[in-house]
Image (cartoon, rainbow, N blue to C red):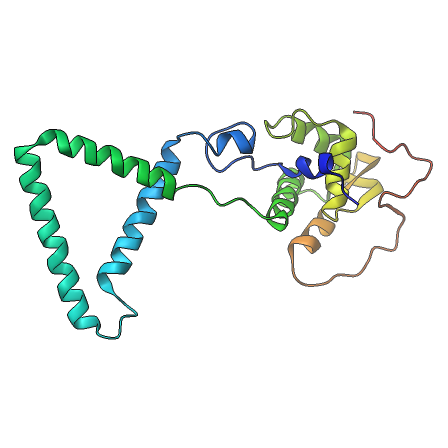
Amino acid sequence: MTTDSEAKTLELPPVPEFGSGRPRWAARRIHPRRLSHGHLAQWARLRAWAVAADHPTRGKTVTARAAGLAFAALMIWRTANEEPRLIAIAAGAYAISAWRAGRPVPPTEDDLKRRVLLGVQHLIGDQDAVFLTDVYSAFQARPAAHHLDNARLRAVLLHCGITIHRTVRVSPTQTGRSGIKATDIQALLSPTPVDTPSEGVDAGQPDGEEAVDRP
């Protein structure tokens, strides 16, 4: 069973959607990408309202809404000529609205697990496997996981269903240490079931190996 402290460690790469640092803090920052996403979301809503795709009387509705938009554009143009300060106020209000519309949706636990799997897959690259110590070092180099020790990172990997093999072969000259195989990550990311490996693995059961590899 995963404890609350272990559940928090699922904030792993890629870190936040906007900015850098811990996801909970970065989500509250005013970031240009968030404003851009909010702007695009609002324009998409306006376009969907204007075209009235699902309206039963689409022809009349589109004509009426187009006339309303034209009248609004005319009023904005007249206001810009008569009271330029109101345009600045309207722009500020629109920026606040776009910032709110661009608020990132909190990821689900399945989304966070997939991010961890993709992060491990990126570390493996074209190799057949990656050593566990290299995974620890790479994750701890990221802002979202630099405060985590090896034990908590190992708990995250096991919670995501990753099999930790006692020995893996990364290259002809690099073998003999515990690690993660590329085939296991591909199986977790793919909906196609694969056969369970027949060799001995370390899935968290007590054995002679230390619970955490020494970096």
